[in-house]
Image (cartoon, rainbow, N blue to C red; front, side, top):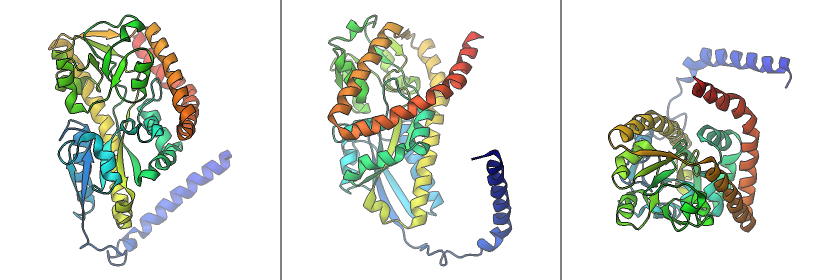
Length: 371
């Protein structure tokens, strides 16, 4: 597009906006009947989640989404949210919605890697993209179409529904000074990060959030990652583990999801379909904002109230984990064509973003550190 074409497009958009404003009063005269909206037709949905009931941010986001949708629809779409274990076990949410026993659910796509290996690339890739890059790829870079393709065999429609931002590296009762310290370590860590841990000699264990504390306290696991300071403080990990490591190499921007039964979605009138999508998109924005607003405050609480010993993984350890990540991804993509298709698209988009993030975010953060 030439400069003249670009400016002309902007001018046309401005003119169109003025025309719409001028006509708005006439458009608003259209009645609900003329728009084929049946205000007496209501829908009651169930939303199952992988998170404990009312769990901070994760569960709260689902609750807020249901409230927003109900308000926007004038009560025509009423969604009841069930925390993990209230209606079905947390890790059965995907199958429950796929089979139509609930109309929608929320979770993180790496929980379903056993059903569809490519799904995990829509949650988080070790040393991969951060939150804003994941949103850019999914919403504006072709990622959503691939995600829909992966979930189509399960009769599900996915949508991005939040992001944790970069996570912490985890809680340990021993220092991690070399890669050898991971050998024999039983750690709660899901997704591709878990496969990397296995590759370097540890044992990855995937359990739902509500079970982590007890498993760590009783020695079922030796270490755990979870999310960040806000949740880790609330979960009480500082009372049963000594060292708190960063950065979260395994989850640099974990995308959360809503998954909707396609038949249930198709049964909704078009306006309710759009209202549902808007409610989920709002949840996507709110969730990351809430994480960012809370994590620094609770990092200070962990330091001052709990006297947590903060540690950073050494550059040498991170380099070795990065190499192991490449091997894991090569294994996954070699054994599953859909995983290769998805990761090729993911990797191409990440590569394209490197120059931009280097001259913007990286340069800016280096400036802050210098002062």
